[in-house]
Amino acid sequence: MTDFRGLRIGFIGGGNMAGAIIGGLVKSGFSAANMVVSEPFEEARNRLEQQFGVHVTADNAQAIAHQGRAVDVVILAVKPQVMKLVAEGIAPAVQAHRPLVISIAAGITIPDLSRWLLTGAAGAAELAIVRCMPNTPALVVEGATGMFAAPGVSDAQKAMAAAVLESVSKRNYWVANESLIDVVTGVSGSGPAYFFLLVECLEAAGVQLGLPADVARGLAAQTCLGAGRMLEATGEDPAELRRKVTSPKGTTEAALNSLEASGIRGIFVEAVNRATERGAELGQIMGQQ
Image 1 (cartoon, one colour):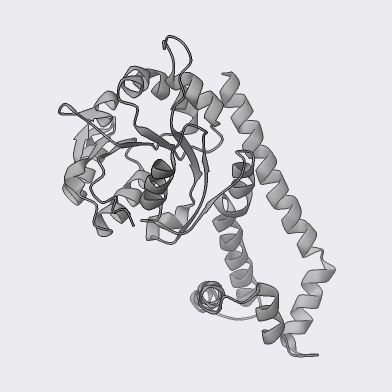
Image 2 (cartoon, rainbow, N blue to C red):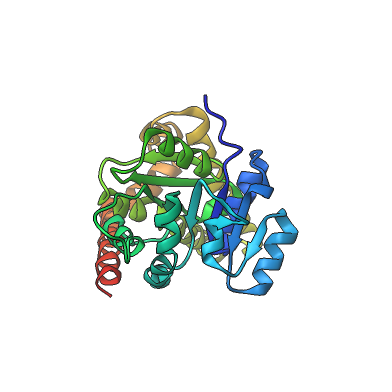
């Protein structure tokens, strides 16, 4: 198995997700000395340099070729709204050094990103781009990520991308076509918010029925965490785990009957559908700008 810990990695953007990935990489044995982060805000640059020992710069091109050495991988960790400007700005460096490009920006499609990165290029050129949708639990090294590779990505580069993302994500999946990244967005990208809302609702119900707020929140949060760990540890189908905790004519059955009567399954299908549609819409809007 290839050891990718010697990779040279550049980050464009030094926000929370970039910091999470850097932290995960360092913990996994990747060398901070081989990482360079371009970040416009001096305070953020200083924090990353002090916390991890990475090289920092305010020049995006230096995240691709730092001190005369090109990186193997560049991670685009900027807001979708500024991706076009950033991509066009680094286009000459990307064309010159041809790193693997990993984008974690929601909604930005590979054709749009490729077009921006090829600004000014003479003739056709195929770039190695991997589009990813991580989620915020990556900040505590509990992420889930969907990935799609453009045709120009080699098997070795796919392995590189997986090695990078596995530093912060417990579950990483390649999808067969790019449109499925929008579905990943609906399921796991936006998914943490669904669970936070569930904990809010359980806490509110507990308080309404007499529990102190801290007790209700603690019970709800730990139950959410524990249920997730049971799924992971047992490997059983969630429906089977649900059946095991549901005694006939018991308390859980009464609660589940109420949820089913409210149409909870359809509610979640519609929620994921709307998130998926909105992801595709945002991609179209930003691609046309």
